[in-house]
Image (tube, rainbow, N blue to C red; front, side, top):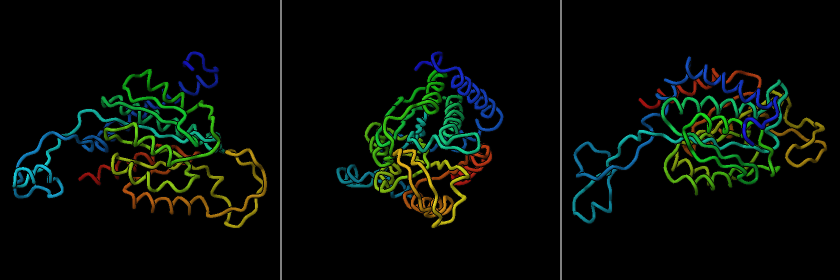
Amino acid sequence: MPLDLLPSESLAVVRRIDITARRLVSELFAGRYHSAFKGRGLEFDEVREYEPGDDVRDIDWNVTARRGHPYVKRYVEERELTVLFLVDASASQMFGTRGRTKARLAAELAALLAMAALKNGDKAGLMLFTDRVERHLPPRKTRGHLLRLVRDVLVHKPQGRGTDIGAALEELNRVQRRRAVVFLISDFLDANFEKPLRIAARRHDLIAVGVRDPWEEGFSPGARILVEDAETGESGAWTAGASAVGRWEGLKKMFSAAGVDTLLLETDKPLTDPLLAFFQRRHRNRR
């Protein structure tokens, strides 16, 4: 749906998010984005003879075997990065108890990072998924494209009700051949996606962004609660398992083992502080 055909309330939200993102990027994030991601994307340039001090991991064994002495691959920094948002659009993303849904939080993050990418001359794209991939915006670097990206995250009406993170990662691995910075944004109410996660992390700079509502933290394991499942439409008594806090800590261990960076955002808090801390951590790790 074009922006000018959106319901007035939704259009107003998109515009507010856009204005806020532009202000935050100008005041806080443009330089930090550059220091966190620029220089991380490398592309192959040529091979040259091995010299003492070269990293043995860069040896091109095929060329070395043909020529009889060691050669290493030489890489150069990509002038243009590709930033992709792989966003969970399942029904649980419409949940929020503090005036902001998880989907709204995801839209705000995507707007801010896409704006930072645009200012740095990078492309941004989007893949929305439920139990299937429902929307794919190939990476571009125009302001109109950025607004469409925010709109789709915010107002997309999912066809599927479940969540299949593994299938989304497999589609990412299939369609995105060149290395990209990928933000996987979800509440991660899914399982059995570790293998495609590891494959994606080898190919891309993958960041897992957890979105959480404070309501999800308020139940002790074993508590019985009457709920309606947003992803199946079924209602009934639910026995709380591990707390949201404990579940995220478990996920972080899996992400770390796969070489995936993490960021946690909550619907009742501004995203600026955790995002700034994330950028600072990335910058320190590059040194």
